Length: 466
Image (cartoon, rainbow, N blue to C red; front, side, top):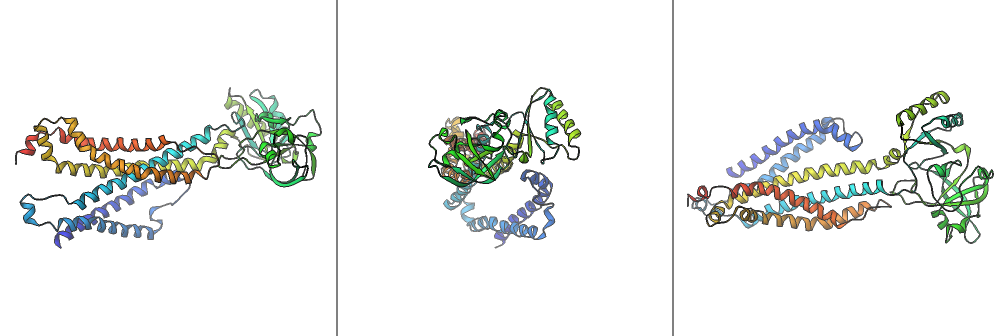
């Protein structure tokens, strides 16, 4: 009982010391964690004493659990057997140690797989062709100010401004939802709620939207301002048309306006890739011009933006000049995924580090138990690489078992996460292979440190007592 109490007491004291260090490190790292999470999770570690008390009790519980097994095993050894040199490893103890290493590396590989998948999805979303041009475009909210036309006209004389366009929304922001009646392939007026962009005649050209059939809005046709509509390919399919051309000339009724469909746009991603492309319509309505899109030249970009701001200050002085570049504005939709990826990466690094600590401890213990065996092998002519291989192969088998467990679990977890995206990267085999290879390489480097040290030791020191 005295031996068991000593072992458990030492374990509890180590856990309590770790708890104190945790409080200090958590207090120092809390601002960084809040920044990484994108919002203030907590202002102070000690803002909720109940949580601190619960963690204190948890530390004691961990100390008791961690100290119980060695206390039970070590205090049960028979002194006579130990002093006679018959101290041997138990099968249960070896199995427990190996199981803990497998569990740690299973967790590490799972987090590595998650990190690679999250960053692959982010790269996929940022590099996918969106169907429109978002580069070199400055977007400015007008809030439908009465002087917006004066401001837009004043930009025409600036050398760095290539073109301007009005719209009720820009890609990356939600369009209107409009109750509409559109003529379908049966000649009937089909009632539907469709996404709607209110634009001017320059919008389609400025955003380089492609036409699948028909024509775009034009000032050469005055009736376009009241009697014309553009739809996308998804809307044409909704109406039952086999080809976009079949939708041209069909009638519509929307918000008191009636007219004809003059063109079908190729589908483009006006919302995040988390959402599938929806049926979309475009019409000209001057009351809905809440945004101005300005295509600018990359030459002297800073001076161009400053000149645009000066024009704004002269024409719409009652409002601050707010602006964003469209590519940055569009990428803001993926901030949550970016933060998620960073958290995954940091937890993966931490998990791998902790796993390596456990593996290093097990390797050190195993090497110590085989010191005399290594000495005998060296005397009989074993080379250093063969001894390193001898000490490493068993641990690499544990990493292999961890990979076999983590690979299907990782595939299942990331497959479920990717289901939230309408457009997603495939789960390539190399993602899992790379995660396993990284874990195996780190594990081998960890083991090699102890294995090389044992292989290069003088066998005389380990054999002289025999």
